Image: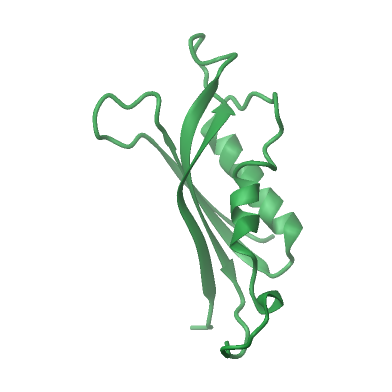
Length: 123
C-alpha cells in the first residue's frame, strides 16, 4: 500500500442555506462539517519542513465556509459536500481524495446525528 497523508478538520459549524421543506427554505441552517483530504505525502517530514510540503489546514476550513456561495440555496446537503470537495480539488492538484461528513443540527430531536458522508476521488 502506498503512503498517504490525511489532513482533517472536524466538527466545524457553519450556517448554510439548505433543505427541501418549506420551513427550511429561505433561512440558513446550522451544519456540522468534517473534512478529510488525502494527499500524497512528502518523502519525509523533518522538524524544519516548510508548509509547502503539506497543505494548510485553513484551506479545508475555507472550503467548508468562505468558499460556499453566499445566498445560494443547496437543496441537498450532498450538494454542499460536492461543492466542498470540488473546491479542494481545484485548490491543490496534490489532493487525491476528499471525504466530507455533514450533520444537520436543526433536525435532530435528541443526541442523534442526521446527515451524510461523501467521498470523492480525483478523476
